[in-house]
Image (cartoon, rainbow over all chains, first blue to last red; front, side, top):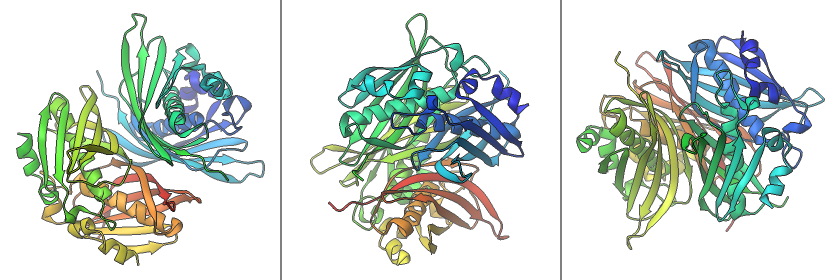
Length: 132
Length: 132
Length: 132
Length: 132
């Protein structure tokens, strides 16, 4: 279901994202790092990290709030230039109530040796969509 | 020069971003909204807004800190679902010192009638890269 | 009314805050800078700036959402060490809907010469409290 | 040493904060919740949570960057109204480099039964102060 939801986002298809885990307050989003996703120095563009933070936070919140959610906002702190083969964004709900979930995300890259390197951390608030 | 810098970012080319103004603590980044940039409900994907915030903040800081900068992080608050023809991210330096600039960004969409609608606001800190 | 609300907050009385303007999406909160509010180097403590950001954002949102609000969170970027006679936090609603307001805040200090110096900027999301 | 540093901050004395743990990328700051720290509904004021986030982030960064640090900014998301006997802010460095540390903080309250309740989460960037 989460994979289908991601595939229904044209921008996630453009980036090449996939959901590899979803449930119980957690979501993992992965992106294979390819030339088109880089910035001028060859590193993964910060905008891809920000996209992955935004989307994994939202999916993680969807596991507790249901599919109709609105992300109110998030904050991302970059740790180091991101290189490697794959970006892995692991989002986890810190708390979910009736109206909102507060979610955190760790963004790693995985190198050819399989080692993970933390590249950024994020946190945000996601609201349950209200019937209009 | 700013246009050349943007064009040297493969991800900015993938998104289809352009710099339309650059100088004196300000940068304007624009993206034509097309099908590939949407989420599942037809709105512009939040990740595109986050990309535009990140990149316009960084370019605005580059006008005062010079071209070698590292974005430490930023925060974005979404205001409403983004629709329209063009995304316009206007970033403006609130303060620039020797080591860092604090920058704000307003993210608008422009409709067929030319009217602008505020969709998100962002702020972040950009560091001057140090000689290594 | 806003002054009464502030005076009903024991912590705002401990800090010595006052509301000097309130209405139409805006609130101004002021604090006289005294010894008790400083950090170890004689500057105003960042926690006082954070308090003033939080509270002025919340009051500004109260002008559009009504008195029953919950602040979801905020981000603050510090610009320079804060000195002077008075801290002035000017918060302004960027957008207010039915459920939430997105608010920004500029934090200045005012010196003996009356000049204002920008010390920090903040932005956050405030939710309308729901009937339980 | 950390306790001495905290005691040299007049505002931390006004709030009544103490450092209960310090070292190896971590700092724990505690505040006994008393009447003077509340807001109008009897809950701990959000400004106290923001102060505790700011200060514990800074102290945690000090364990890796050394005592001369400048907090660039932070983001806090509130989870629920804070009640209880004691506020406990646990900050932990996610990554520390030569120039900056990225730090996260969990803010709990402890009730009469000794149970901890998560009330807010924060993250921020702290810079190493440069020789001027």
